[in-house]
Length: 339
Length: 230
Image (cartoon, rainbow over all chains, first blue to last red; front, side):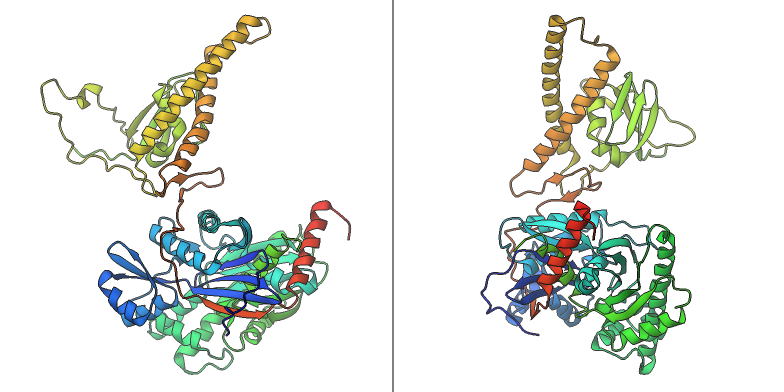
């Protein structure tokens, strides 16, 4: 990882913004490079008495009346110090309605990640998950909140489907045709596109957090411990110990669930949508980071291949799974400008 | 006696017709509709129609045995007596963003006053036209008048109340609602006053064929919109 603060060349117009349950990532292009800025989507409110300690440790914070709020990676670290659980402004992929405090935190985070626009009303594409098929929730409030935040940062805010962003990022060589699944922390987003036209998109309200909770319950551990173990990295094809085995089991269950739902959703639209040829199947997202995720997914998929109604040419990982959505949104933003 | 919890509003149409597009209601004389109390409190049309006595609004809890609303004298303090202070009255409704309903009421009343002024101007203009061309203009019957009033008030509220809320209070939170926003989203989420020097992880990677992808996507989208064959 490199910090590219020395590059003073003017960035190109257009920015992509991935708003995830775990991370907020922005992407900008500048002289043959893409600059990604990331912040952990977490915050922790502490008593004002902790101010001195935070100053000494160099942690940045914002003051809110009698409280101070630590935001980002520092919040996770401070949560461990104080033996508390960091708060998340997004819950299972979406902003919780009525969480006014979370909105302010999100505003600060987005402002820091985006920075100032290159010009007034510079185009910013931000991602919105599709409505979950397994929960009675919609994305109207979520989209409205982020539209407001991005606009207040001085940008022209345009929303785009999260999984479609992976299509724009990873399938340019296939003419923007493919099946994409974004394995996120709060939910998994799925989209099918042919020549850039969306066939269907949906989300399921299960993701990395669901895996952590399930595995923690199974082995009598805590969610944060399982999450830390998962983020440390492990091999899905060769899990070691009870906790990793539990994680692998829940990974298998999540993948099966996503594939079964994808098959069901495709069958619903197959009469209205024809696939001229086999399409690539691209997987992305922070939950897809464990070693051998793609071979593991392929092995699960091969068992249900006969029942799977979509013809898939290959299963592949996104070139940069943590940044693929932001990159796809950047592609969308760049195509708004002719330069 | 058990306390009556106000959960719904009973709306009865007193005019020939009452249109409340923000509640999705259209009532004729004598028709009754039940509206959730919070939706009713937010409805500018309902408030406007109530003010011009086109509808009667009663707060009540629906049940199998209907309770009629208390008579007006019940609520009024007698001369020379101290008004009774309710011990467990309804909590003042404060909508998200911190603007109390009372303040909204005042703003809406102001907007209604403006709308009535505009309506008066329109009526004067209409009467003028009737005088100049009585044969060609339609008679101004009661139903048409009440519909015109409802339309004018609704239109005026959507413009003037929205404008008033948007321009309200420099730096303070204002409520803004649009046609695609069924819920209130506070403005001023991103504060320019908050010190925002957070630690952001920066990473630079090779752009690859990013420009090519953007260009290809632009072509694909142009083809779709213009209908050019491949």
